[in-house]
Length: 75
Image (cartoon, rainbow, N blue to C red; front, side, top):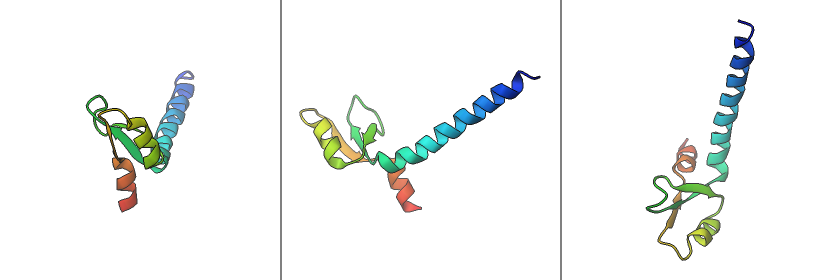
């Protein structure tokens, strides 16, 4: 039983980090590089449209608004 407590604490910490990271990510990663190789919603690591467009330059990919960011703006 004494081994389960540290494991539960570790799991709780991990989950809180993951979920807080997703909320923060939706705020900072506003644009997604989208194309066949990326799937949906794409590679959503870009804070500005210009950054995304620079990464898409010379490829068949395009840039779109991150759906998580768009959903957070509706609330």
